[in-house]
Length: 262
Ligand SMILES: N[C@@H](CCC(=O)N[C@@H](CS)C(=O)NCC(=O)O)C(=O)O
Image (cartoon, rainbow, N blue to C red; front, side, top):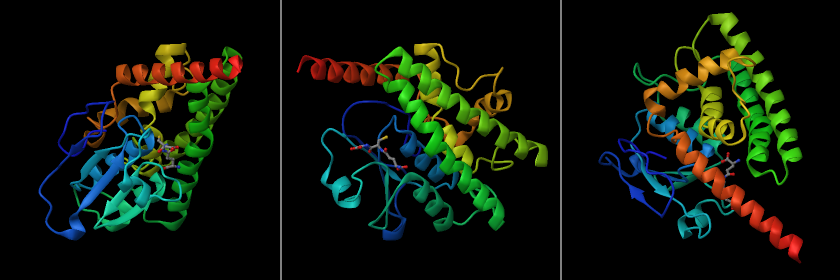
């Protein structure tokens, strides 16, 4: 995950990177994250969209920090946003908070729409990404057999087809480039933070989950998303995602082999 004004250096050890100087306690913003984590990526992009400086702290999930355990004692997961000493957990909750805590400006528009109905629709589709698309995608990456991988790929493709339809409705209504309209919004963040893993899956397994043939609107949307300034340096390089995915797969295979040996 790139912190503000820094270049991504994926993988590896606990790191601290600092953005601009902090003005006071309420401006003290920390993100506990993991470079490859889609959930952390969406939080960092949201902060960058809002022009908020933050300190990014890379967690080692095999050896969770005291700060993480005390900030998110319920789930013990990243990301956690710590604003003025107060922790906020769960990435979609955090992005919602970021949108409310930092007022929009001409250079950083709202992430959620103003209209209550449109807000509800955005929250529905963001939850759909996490409930349907992400488990399918993770299933493809972690599958123990090729049959399992194919089944998970089908699940993910079905979710992508729904999202394509949802985006077609947005595009038909206003012809805008993003779910959020002229700029990246809540659903864009929810989905766009997964693009590095979707590309890694294409490279590793030849399954195109965002595909110009099957999901042409999303394929064009994905190209626009990675070009957004706030996403640059935060969405990891696909080569790094491939390497990370290979490590996960090696771990899954080793765990399966050790279970089989018992
Ligand atoms: N629903 C959570 C998911 C966060 C999540 O799964 N984080 C993973 C890393 S990608 C984690 O911290 N895993 C550590 C663990 O499960 O112990 C969110 O949206 O923030």
